[in-house]
Image 1 (cartoon, one colour):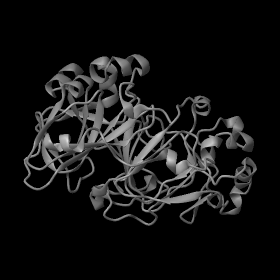
Image 2 (cartoon, helix red, strand yellow):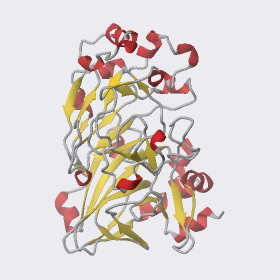
Image 3 (cartoon, helix red, strand yellow):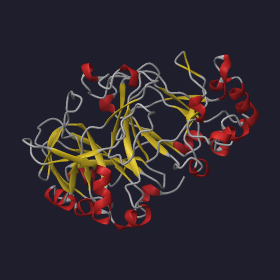
Image 4 (tube, helix red, strand yellow):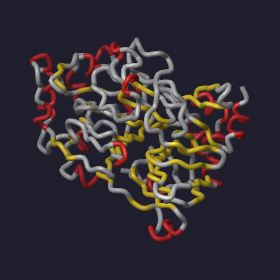
Length: 403
């Protein structure tokens, strides 16, 4: 298959298919615009669909019942009479630098990030994602991530719009070890050792690997490293006990009952940091002068920044305006609001999506197209176009300053 023709005919832009992922242990919040009849399209044994993965090159680690391509994005091409699709990962692998630029390709030989929209009715368990040294032992990679809480998808905030982050200063390793020792006795009380932060719409957080967190019930846009490794440290979540397998999913077999090793998964200094919020909370930062941007018909902010691994922006095209937007590297994006066009492509924010339906709300903009600029037209007289854009590592960007 000629992937270069697909990219060229798309003017350097790839049209992506909605990519739905269930998580069996957690009730969906039903705010991802998926049709109510399709929440359990993958059958109740797999759980409700509560996540949409965006420009994803990796498989979701969802157990033996998951199909081999679950979590992997597809590029759709052709016309409505005969659509075809191919894995996004394969397109990037074939085109290399022509798709993602020489810096990313030469260093990673793949698109190394993805983004998600996750939507849970309640909170997730207090868990962490592995640091590089621990992930390597199970053939995986670290997983730093970020969060942003978009207004458009959170008119209802779910059962628990708070997130627990890290541990209270003064917590000891012995405290955490004890929580693991009493895992089978019911609630292991690890939440007694942490603090919850009320989630604020239109803001976000960034989180290094190795930090405990229990995401709350807001629909969350999550740029992250392309990995799916974790360890759960909370034994009862939303009144449901969890199996020990949740702790050791990504732990070498010989370490399954080594409590000291499990405690070593924590980045201890960051977990007990007394100024955690000051370091990792993120308010949007305009990318340029607000007045100058609005004069040109748009407004754009960094909404995830301060990580060397990924970044994200929120772009608004004002009603009745057209703007050419240039970026220093490739990106995936998903629409939050509005309708219009981007070059030859329609932009349509759907009201409701049937499982398996193709939409026009998600695309990937290649390196050359991003640098040359994409022209976005908003014909509405009242409604803005709003999109969220996630980027991989890009040393030219000030948003990539390290933690």
